Length: 382
Ligand code: MG
Image (cartoon, rainbow, N blue to C red):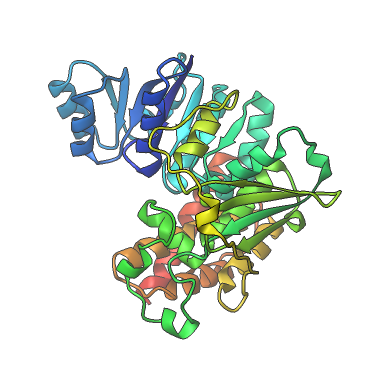
């Protein structure tokens, strides 16, 4: 029996994790959950399921809920997230938070020797060096909840990482894969939020359309497997049938295929020892699909992808700056304050404005994140 907590339980990854936990009462037990401000969702789930601990964002919500429900102990805020992530009785923290917020609880969990099932890829983008160093020091495993990295972990089974020649990370191309740069000037938020293959949260769907998500996944793979950037390549694959591939030195390429269903990577991250059927999981019908297509990532169509990878190779604060600027720009786009192509403009010019320096501890990362957000915010007004 594995005891877990889920951070970001009301989101896309969180709700699907709860579904997997429900299907395996003999393997998994959810001790606690965190939600942000989605209190109506929380009330609904607490009416039919019990947890020992629940973390909400605001103090007033915690007090109010504690009066309504006797059962779970309510905690709140950043301290609440850290409390939940370091509970004695848990083995694994499922991090389904979005953005920089996921970093501090991940680090606390690692220091409390909890394994991490990580959907919050920004944690590794922002502070891959800090997180992987800590994971090594405290003997903690990080299991990716990202379809591409789950595919890669599955393709690595029984093989040596030293024998890997290349990781091929597949990319659907996102909402605007068939649009020209000219057409991209006037696309709307609603259009950007329709992903051709996957149903996900708003932030990651926009990141998929800008290809920032794919750049982040290259960085994530670099840190998870300690492989140089030269051995990691993104590949356009519109059908999203192959979730990623590993090419070995003998020329053999291993691929993992399936329908787009995040419950599979979630289940694999939590129970890797054996395979279980998943309820209502749509099977892949290769005869129906018949053809698969592949292509390179065009640098003219996706300039930000290449800029982010170049910056990541420099190390230091570069990816931290990228993530902060991107979070600000995506939020501004979703609020209708800027146009779609302004996202890449804001990320690029924030990178130009914030000089390179190195980062050592969590406080350095937090400071760099805050300063980069201020710079990015300044560019939105002007
Ligand atoms: Mg992914």
